[in-house]
Length: 103
Image (cartoon, one colour):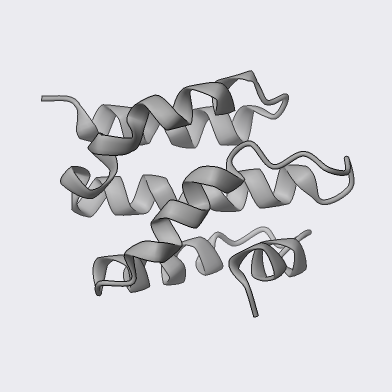
């Protein structure tokens, strides 16, 4: 199952367990998940699943940045367009990631 499919299927859950689980995989050397998550923070083909995908991707990035900011910091510029997305959850988690990456 692709990252996009996993995040779409995670809709309606209150827990951020999937994002935390996927972040642990990134920390364990699955860096391709991080790159996919960065791209999915701007996901918007339909309004039904888009919010869940973006927020789920942002959770992965936030949790990786919390533990290993050096993995996320080279990609901060790519995350800037995600601050234009409508839901505050995505923005808030990305602000946390930027904070973790600050020197």
